[in-house]
Length: 130
Image 1 (cartoon, rainbow, N blue to C red):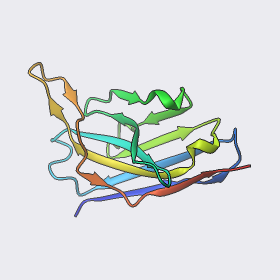
Image 2 (cartoon, helix red, strand yellow; image 1 turned 90 degrees about the vertical axis):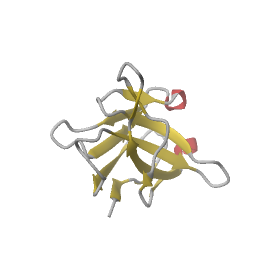
Image 3 (cartoon, rainbow, N blue to C red; image 1 turned 180 degrees about the vertical axis):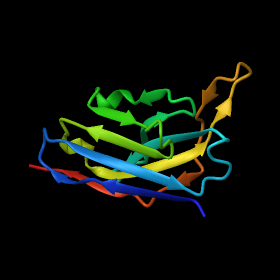
């Protein structure tokens, strides 16, 4: 059974920092089968959006709206874990944050890419308010 368990999050004031973490277990074929892992978020009334992801070779991509404030990390010795440090948080960052995982796809030149995610965690709340 696949499980993605998120931790961290909470309530902070604008300008403060938070860290969210995720541990995945039960991923079919992992670690031999390369997986992408990502953080998504969803605010009330808005669609879920990707925040950042790391591919099966450890290459990290972060969405422009994070403005360099969010740093994704994946432990070399524990590739099933994913953390995201968020600094200088804004009210607009308030959302439920979801960890996600999915098998990486590969181009003809064996470059991994992450088109979709098959598994999502339950989500963890991040609230930023004055």
